[in-house]
Length: 216
Figure 1 (tube, rainbow, N blue to C red):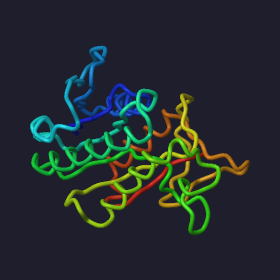
Figure 2 (figure 1 turned 120 degrees about the horizontal axis):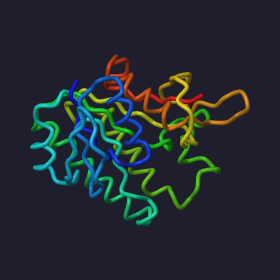
Figure 3 (figure 1 turned 180 degrees about the horizontal axis):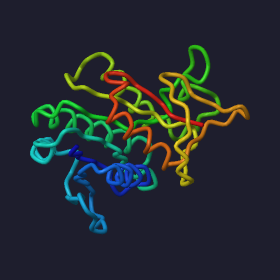
Figure 4 (figure 1 turned 30 degrees about the vertical axis):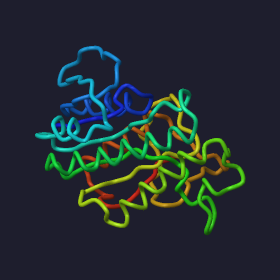
């Protein structure tokens, strides 16, 4: 399968890139500036996800698009990040649709998962107030997909509360709209195992036009 991957040099994106290459897929890795080490079946491009014309051009001919895009939260306020996320996804969805690629997976945020009956993570007391602006934007992107605003075969994947570097075990649980916690009450997964869940979905298509999550 040929995959166009945005955010390919980020923490989550780099793990998805390596998982897809390990499984024998061809990956076109899109980055803002970073040069990646040459690998078999890997092509690296520098492009702007917020440019609809660029997205349409580079997506054409691929089997699927994965976006692990993040504006870089250390460089922007939550409000600035929210606007960058909006512009990026508006251009991404429009450009992918023009390219005639149908399949797209969006790596989104944890905030739209249900933490308790009737309350999303972003609305919970424990969620950091300084992250709310961009988290609410991510939730609106998911809602727009669920409304059918974009005629694409989408999947939206939310991580648990904690996603960090760690072992690739291949052992985790899948869910849909509820935050997953383990027996100790923790909500976590390694970046490597999260990447397995993303590439599994690309290959198996269990959550087309649905959201899913993965955690221990």
